[in-house]
Image (tube, rainbow, N blue to C red):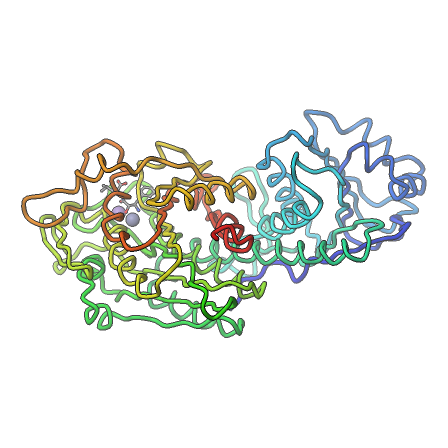
Amino acid sequence: MTYKVLNNITLKNVNNGVLSNLSTELLVIPVNKKVMASSEYKELDKKSNGYISRSIKDSISPTNQNHLISSLNGVKAKKILLINDLNEKDDIYLWLNKYKYVAKIANSIGCKNLAILDGQNYPKGKDRFWFLETISRSIESGAYIFSTTKNKTAKTEKIGKDIISSQASLKNVSIVTSKLSASDTKKAKNAIARGFSVGEGVNTAKHLGDLPANHATPKLIDKIVKNTVKNYSGLKVKTLNEKDLARLKMGSYLSVSKGSDEPPRMIIIEYNGGKKNEKPVALVGKGITFDTGGISLKPSSGMDEMKWDMCGAGTVFGVMCSLARIKADVNVIGIMACAENMPSARATKPGDVVTSMSGQTIEILNTDAEGRLVLADALTYVGRYKPSYVIDMATLTGAVVIALGSHASGVMANDQFLADRIIESGEETGDRAWQLPLWNEYKSCTKTNFADLANIGGGREAGTIHAAAFLSKFAEEYKWAHMDIAASAWSSSPKGGTGRPVPLICDLILNKKLK
Ligand code: BES
Ligand code: MN
Ligand code: ZN
């Protein structure tokens, strides 16, 4: 399986093109002064006897941003969508939302294809190529609709006030530019291909997260990964099963899956597109396929959301697929640390002490602080690859939801250069991250009388930082950053995975910011 929504996104470069002749189900026009002054727009408007400019005047206003026009005499496009364009000072998230909306509209009216004009108007400091990459990513990810576990015969359904199509109708997108030089055309095509691939990575991560926990156990995820990589020549997979993890003395990791009938899997994906002697960047993702809390059982309200507790691993998978698709010239190791956290007669109990692969013993005071237990051993293991940088991603603490809300992922690091680059890529992509301190003062809280470390500490204070402080004890050998994505990786209303931080990580790696 490759997780694809659109079949393709192509560039249509028209030289003195005739827009009225463009055959598409939906022509999308960003309304701004530059577009309205262009010869292409004027031709189209003339063919419609001025209907389009009258519609803009009558229907587009600060409170009404969009207007849909059905078939017009003299214009081949079946429908036209006018979208009020943004201002260069507008924040990037507004641009992302705008183009996601275009895909959603197309799906809601059952369009199979659309053509969208390059508005020639971009956020401050960004150029046409940033824009083409970003809208390609936003349209691909905006077109995503989860349908795997839905009745395939039902085409639409009613959710609240909205009629939602149970499957994406949109398949082909073209982006219309005009009068680009040959070299700019090439750059534009590359930007679109990259945005499309990153969008696919976003959807891959969303899809893995959205799958219910009984459809995405560690074993099933292993199967999905293995089937997917068959489609990419550049990816290699190796999986460690329960016996392998025991042989490696991963007592911390195994303490989490102990109460579950589903065996754990640590999935290692290698992509070597760079120079032979170049050290890899390593990505490590928390892959708790369901987090009940274990013996420290969670309250039942909202517990279904713990099926998204594997979104760190989903991000790793999404990024690896994007890199392979783009054939990026980089070396990256991705680790998906998958396990299910359940209570049972065999489950780990509060107060149990286990020995991690690093040799450090851990007193498990709360079995619901399980993410850090699988990550501890995965972080020790990844040291074998002598990585240049390690970034772990984990839906680790409810505290980060309180600290930052869903607009930013939390970042903590033992290397400021790495933290700075992560934050920079967040700004660049609109997939933002914000740093919390990881000072030594916070690290003392992992002390206990019965082991080298305790898996919780600090009480109600700074839960996100204390979790990172615990992880830092397993990441001392290399440059490392931890991203707490508990608030950013999925949304509770409407419920669904977001595919974050795939865009951020892809930007960081593809633009070679880690030199
Ligand atoms: N997966 C949860 C974190 C989480 C909670 C994400 C709520 C999103 C929403 C994690 O395994 C967990 O349970 N963390 C505990 C840690 C605590 C026991 C120290 C938490 O945050 O409550
Ligand atoms: Mn938990
Ligand atoms: Zn968890």
